[in-house]
Length: 200
Image (tube, rainbow, N blue to C red):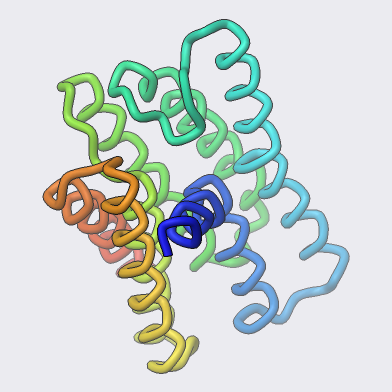
């Protein structure tokens, strides 16, 4: 069981969640030309996954970070600030056509949550980035459901189960205390609710 929980912790890495959320949005919520979707998905993947992984690899080689899970608070500041800059670039360049307002505000919410995580890291508090990402995904799903009734309640329930599994995996690995998981989830969820009101 511990091996599975460890595997899940890597699989549910927060760096992959924005791209997965975007893919689900384009597949089931948005009805746009495939060329536009492909272009935006490439941009989202590059700015939220590929470049952050390259930045992490460089920081790892330089000895700035010690692990992909960023266990030490001091390890978090540089990657999180870099991620916030990439999110800002994505928001400014990827959604300047005025389309896909829900996804635009999703990334604004992700940016807000990331800035909160940076501030807390500077203050030496380590919230769970895994649960922040899961909270963000659930918050976005809840606001979308309130707006266009997609996704279904069943899908949202599954997301809560996956969030619980993620929390269990982080506790099993002794990566966080309970309050860090709850606070991380709350930051991600609240950020999406705050921005979601703009497309309801």
